[in-house]
Length: 220
Image (spheres, rainbow, N blue to C red):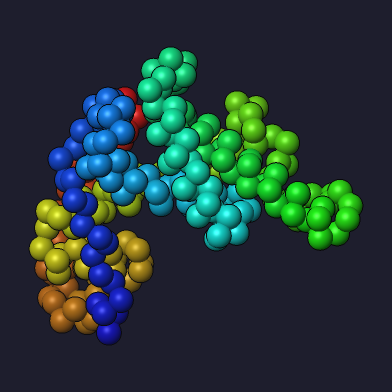
């Protein structure tokens, strides 16, 4: 039944909310493997999804992700100097955008070798000339904002899954992600429909609080 394919997302190993600034401070110690694991677990899907949205293939997006993490490790020591005009969110967008731009350049070089001429770039969704300087790219900023909102929702759902009974979490996902009606969920989960409404109300309130906490944590 539907409950078989709606599984709680991977548990967040670091459920305690912290500000991005405290994580950034700890990332400056490159030997702090736990903090770097936290960084990767928190932001890998965001960066990878962003890379895919720009038009990279899965393998190119994976490479852009790995190169972004390497670049973050190189630049983290001077993070505050580079970031004084913005936030961690916008700084990470710039670093990821540079590495995505590198992938487009690599693709174009490869295409030139194969075709023996300069490609017109029509197969590339975003003009690669914009990518090295994301300050000028409204299209990239819109893509990043969309992925960022998905990132916040995913983090909130992960935290939610750690705080409520699994069956309540599955019911909430069926109602919100699968967009089933309370009656359909009642049948699928063999649960009274009146309880489904109560669970939906309570879990939605908790989700909203978690989302607001994570939003404050990430964007301050």
